[in-house]
Amino acid sequence: MPCRKGIATVRLQDGTIHKAEVHWYEVGKLYRILPDQDAEKHGYLRIVDESGEDYGYAARRFFVIDLPKPLEKVLLGAAS
Image (cartoon, rainbow, N blue to C red; front, side, top):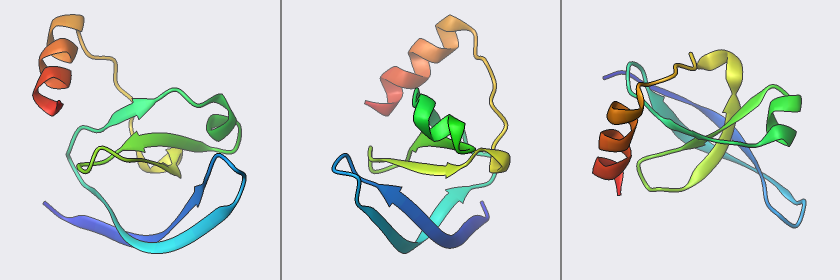
């Protein structure tokens, strides 16, 4: 699948901001979103990547979908 590349901005809990060149996400892949009201206020979503780490990405780059609970449980179980 195609992968998007660019600069990611990550704000750590201590408030410091880091920028790094990253391979963002694969188009067509499902990603888990963690609740983060502060990120959403600034137009970002907190996305969990393949490494299990979460990063802030521009919300406009994603479509948020609600999965049926049985499917969500299966997918979350497969990711752990």
